[in-house]
Length: 185
Image (cartoon, rainbow, N blue to C red; front, side, top):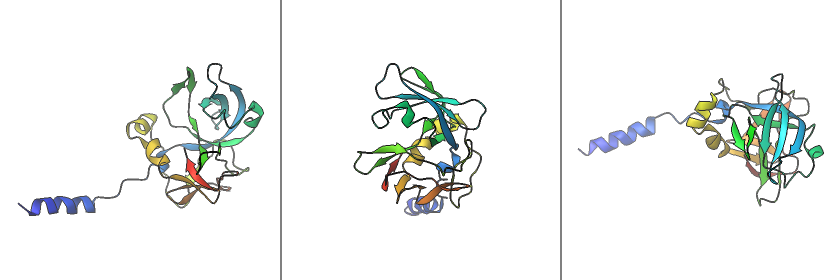
């Protein structure tokens, strides 16, 4: 029956588009309170980051090639993906991921920074988008929400964006200090 393939194609065309992934991530403002070199990896920093939960989270980040000293990290405000399953990086239990931008040519990697007035724990949102409750860590992993979201995260004119819309806190857009355009992950 020639109509059957056409009907299924029409049904696929009428299917709602997939829900955006970033709004399901629990991305919060974090403040790095302590950083130290990973004892067994020249690529990793170990950090304690205040994300508004009472006790700081311990997170490992593969950015030692771009930030040479603990003082380059300590006291900085960053964006942290908080609803990830804990993962061991070089044997260090990491309880989240810090979002960084990479320049188009790959020569610069730097933190995505919230506005200075943004308190630790404030949820980062997509400007103009409805933000549902975050997915569970199991859902993030099973549905590959982080991988799907980072495919659409970009730096545009120094502003962090998702599908072209700025990432914001109540104090304004999140920015990259020196990267005008590039990717974010």
